[in-house]
Image: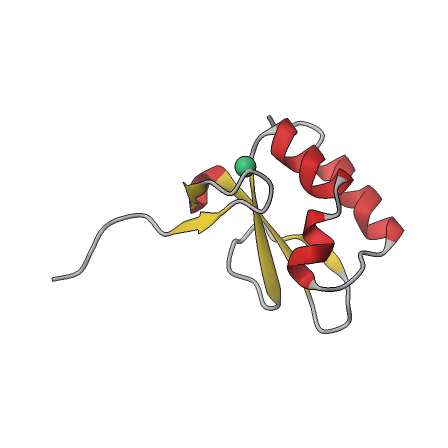
Length: 89
Ligand SMILES: [Zn+2]
């Protein structure tokens, strides 16, 4: 029997387990470029954040994404992520 439960992931900011539709996926590709993965299934290492201002700000401000990726985020990538998430939450 196949489960119809939505796939859930853990938010890097608050640690809640949330359904994928309520999360933003941030992806880091092989070239080290970090961006929002609007498709939720793009290639690369992914980190998930709630679609809430609080969790987004915390993830970016406290370098939780860097911790999750175990790598730095390019300042221009960070700026673009902030811009692209401005209307969330
Ligand atoms: Zn969260």
